[in-house]
Figure 1 (cartoon, rainbow, N blue to C red):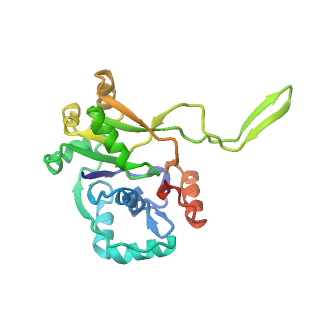
Figure 2 (cartoon, one colour):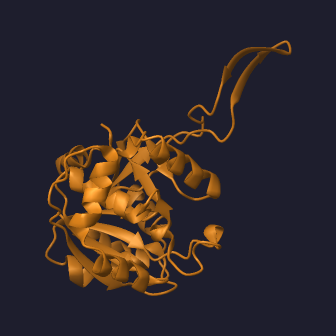
Figure 3 (tube, one colour):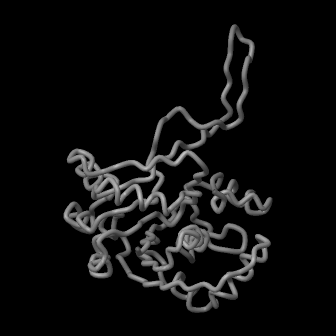
Length: 252
């Protein structure tokens, strides 16, 4: 099964770093977050990638052309103190437009995915220790057009439980009470293309909303590690984990 990664965003909240490169090329340690995402899929035998490029897409192409993947992987595994295995990735680069929305980028890939009954998809700015094999099994078993990985995000602040001005419980950054949210790491049947109109289609709006209304969208609940990279603070969290060798996105 192919894995599609949306790599076309501008990354405006990281304007200092994304002036000359796209957001998926922001580094966690020595390696772009995009490389970390691909290693998650590789762990479950997914080696066939389609990268939907947009803003500064040439930087991503140059990265994979310039670096020998196996040399890069040796550095990666050396840091993790793991024995490196030969990388056998197939990477297809597809320019999906500069200002195309998330749904539109998927539609632009239709020709690349026409032989695929189902495909995986995620954003180029989030990490999780999602069991991709179980996600695929769940998707195929339920026979819906779409499956979204549902996660519960960590709260931004510490939580206090107070009784008569006395703190009876303090928990630093617990899971929030906001409920389940879209964590990326989708699995789609090829019928998803019928739900996307054009370049201006936002996947998270009409397409997914209509799938849900027609009982064609399931949620795969993931209760373990998940971390997006929307802000500097998010990036700092991931960077700290990498530096401390607490790489939760690669642990079961």
